[in-house]
Length: 99
Image 1 (cartoon, rainbow, N blue to C red):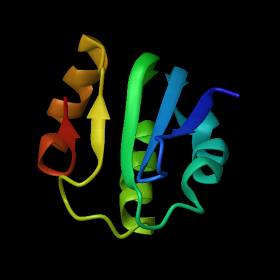
Image 2: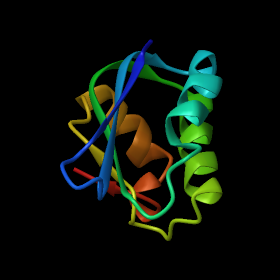
Image 3: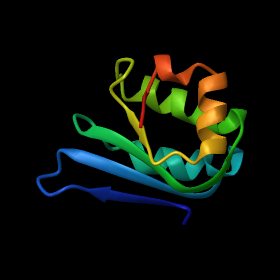
């Protein structure tokens, strides 16, 4: 698996850790990682991500929509510079908290 989900103690926050390329190949695995989350805070840890394309961007938007999260509620953390560049080109700082 290239996505690992960890729940913080108390279960109030879900951390989705992405490893490798964040692209169309992860659509189903990513959906399975978040489909049962309801009221938890969502953090996507991109520390081990090596690449992101438009499909990866779409996955994030679909997750936000599915979970009915407002702009800025989902955090994207530990973004490598190349991925952060893609996120800012796509103006994702308006939709997600990029840290």
